[in-house]
Length: 92
Image (cartoon, rainbow, N blue to C red; front, side, top):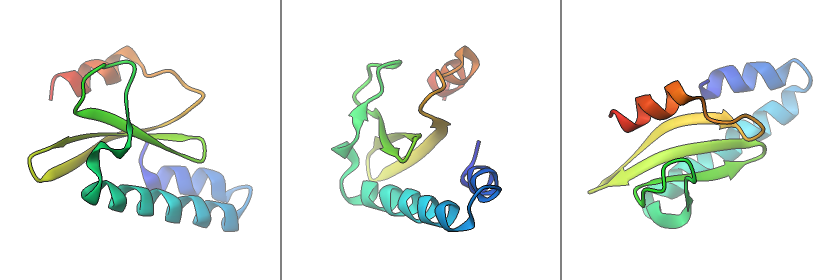
């Protein structure tokens, strides 16, 4: 799921809330450029370079390295990471 899909889904109930969540997610990912270790280690991976920040009910899973931060996935916090998603992220 990408940010656009999330916003469109939430917008069905409230355009204002959808907009606020989108802004929070964008701000959170921009902060990661400066503070890449600010998120917690993702329990499913237990790898220091794969972390997540939670915005509203969504987990923004990212990987950081030398001078970069890559968003790997955005998933609803109530959902478990599917094995296929874990395998895809591990296979990067």
